[in-house]
Image (cartoon, rainbow, N blue to C red; front, top):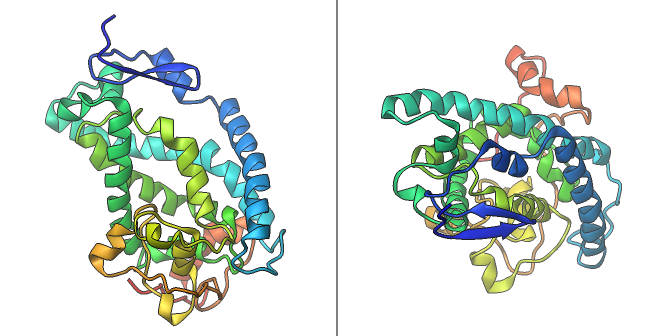
Length: 309
């Protein structure tokens, strides 16, 4: 079979251009089974626990922060819930969004056609598609994130900001509705443009680890590089309740979006403190997290104020 280019990833030769026909078996090797999802999440959890444990000890933003802080085990549960449940629900939601659009555009719903992509985007090597999707997706994520800091989406996003002690596991403290909305908003436009849904898979482990890292209790700012790539200090300022840090640093990876739209904040020589939401704290249990939006709508919970956008 003719292939214009290819990339080896984890022992698997992944097609890198649209003229490579991808089978369901190839996609299944990239898209893990439930058992694979659990094992990968477990291995990454153990590795990052050790790695970030060392960084948080020797480069701490808040030196005396407890290792097993309040909510640590709840966030550990979220770590496994995300790949085993939320990601699967997100794929279903994305499919529901794309189906009428694909039908309207007259695109084939054949499995191989969907995986390969469409048009000019599908002609690019997969690794290039993946990089483009990460950069453009972060721009989409910037505006999605800003919308989540306004009503009514704040009711869901507040769960992520409810952690009053931040470390790397805070990254996965997300209400399922918040997480699904983010994934649908970021993925759907790119897939409609014709990018392959497989393209970003080769970066998944790195992206998951890096998003966790920028929540870690680490004081790094990256110096001048901090204007290009999100640092832990950059994102931790986003989580502070301090007035100076409200309504800032919405980008997940590339601060250039905050620089472009006037929401960049990274003061020299200072580290953020006082995390959490303004108003009544959310109890540290899964049920309280899941029911928080409903309690607010029913008026049984004092309404916290969204961080300013």
